[in-house]
Length: 188
Length: 95
Image (cartoon, rainbow over all chains, first blue to last red; front, side, top):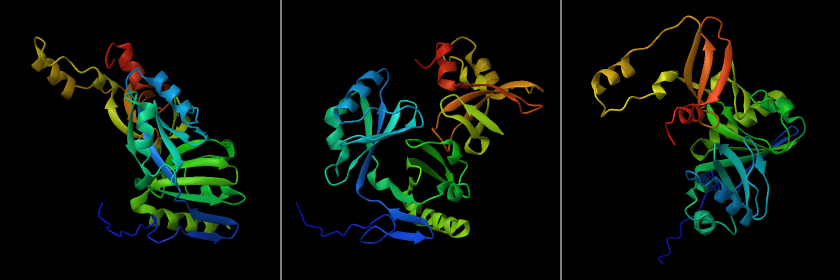
């Protein structure tokens, strides 16, 4: 195998993940999670649910996130999920999942398509009410909501009331980061 | 306007894209007798009711499912929201 000596960069374009703190809010880039989309093939939903048990996760209901070991998953659409795994052990996540799901599901590598910003701090509803339509006051830990932030499609994974992962297109990572930081400055 | 998504609950209409009359689901068989006329009617002819209307909406900034929304075009009142998949399957399409 040739040695290309390529240097990997984070979605925000640096060697190491960025983290900024604005008042009580911390916005941290997270790069240690690999992702793949899992779409059940026609009539194979039960097989997909069984296979997911083997990678340590119970596939969540609509609009929810389920944590597991080694894999976690969140719902993205009818009969479709995004499976998450630690990057260190699952860098080639499709190769790792394919033997488990076999021909019951279609898998696509998603790791490099997304940026994940972990927003933590007290009073997150005050921040997100400036950014999107989601009513955080009525949502609970474990919700996975797809919505729009500054015209960008984004998933909000509500890990805890004071910690939310925002997942959006890697190509507009800097715009999303700017939107979150600017809203945090205006809110606090 | 709020659309009460059958899986996700009430969501803002901003997240959705409108396609048109839900009869678009009922695409005629292109190989049957009189297919040219049937396809012409399917593609070009629409009712334009002042009142209850069944229409297709796409949850683009959400779970990307197609919905059949029954909406009153005079009041914008939404009386029913179904997954287009379920509507099509009930008609024996898209098994």
